[in-house]
Image 1: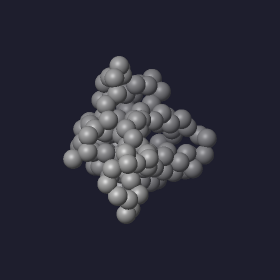
Image 2 (image 1 turned 30 degrees about the vertical axis):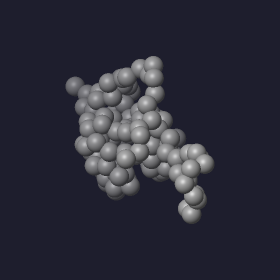
Image 3 (image 1 turned 120 degrees about the horizontal axis):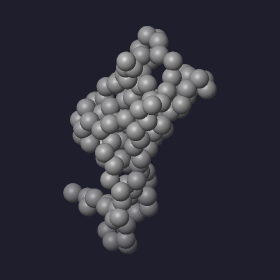
Image 4 (image 1 turned 135 degrees about the vertical axis):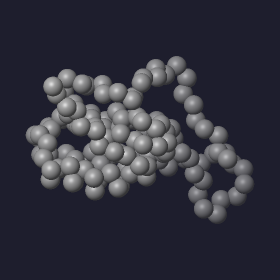
Length: 131
């Protein structure tokens, strides 16, 4: 098993709650533990921005900080570690991945449900209700 990269002196924030409660109306929450790549997060962010067309704001709460290295195929043993191929984020169950401030519609919620299938983990949509 590959040794996990650990960062020292990092502030751990509680990502189970909305950071922007006065602004965020919608969020995507993970339901189980998993690993997300930077490509998955970026593709979801771009799809949402393309859909809302400057009519809302998105806050990405999870960051991909763990590098994954890989040696080239057919290389011999030794000669050190391979170069960094991509970055991942370890997502805990119940953590919030994205927060959005947008005008809600049934059409957009259907779009988000299809978009969540791009993730490699189970996720749900949280709606903030104002009283």
